[in-house]
Amino acid sequence: MDIQVVKGNPTEAELAALAQVLEQIQRERKLAGVRPDANLWGVAHPATAFNPHAFDSAAYF
Image 1 (cartoon, helix red, strand yellow):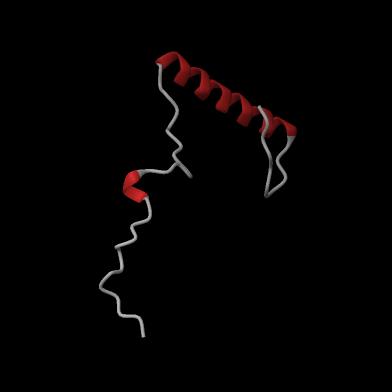
Image 2 (image 1 turned 45 degrees about the horizontal axis):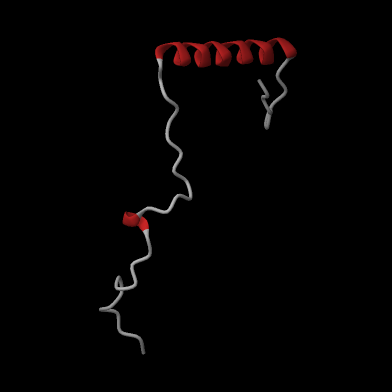
């Protein structure tokens, strides 16, 4: 598991403990059949598509 430290100076033992905890959580989620959260970032969706009539009532001077 790749972990990038962006702040602080953890010891090797602390990084190893964190990696072990995260791997255990990942294993438990897989065994429980929990699907990862859907990441819909950037996916076009009709409800979020541009509406050309959204500002019809705006007056442009």
